Length: 280
Image (cartoon, rainbow, N blue to C red; front, side):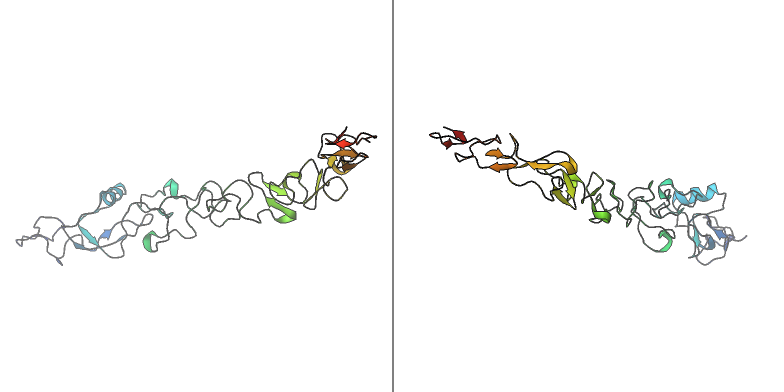
């Protein structure tokens, strides 16, 4: 007869195998490992009906640790468990899975199932969840949105923050980047709001203007020339439906000024009159 072992044999020859509360050779031995997210405790009892998952036996065997799957360990023991997304070595094999590494050092994890659950499987200190780009340190939930056609703050939208380019009279014109709404002809006063080249040559203070006139050209006139040297003129084939007199657009319906299509106005001499822009 000898002390019982945690198995089905009757070591002390008392006509029964190990009974609840009975002393046995493994009592108070170290139970488990303290590698990774595990804590080694003490063997407190033996329960032959209890078995541990293959993962526990495999990990502890790899570390050459004595372990009996029938052991009941103290309540402070944390045995190897399947990995969860928390930045910890939950299966205690000494290796943190690649998908739980904060490789871009932005303090956010991108792995699936990440959550702040508390307890043993809570996130590692200093980490958070839902990184939408684990390789870019400037992209993470709550990051400042940039005008770069990227979802910087991981909310599923790109360049959506209204004031992302608000400095200097600019705004974000996705997908074209930051544009100066005060000076750019294609974004004058608003994103993707181009000036009409027929009546303007510049964007000044978020307003489309022709040259140095201070405004866009009026009805029937075209902005001719480049930049600040442009002028509002009446030109053939331009915006003037009537006829041109110098730099003015005339309706072209009178005998004194008859014409159409922006041609020079003609004088209809009697007995001719102006009919539909033609002297007849």
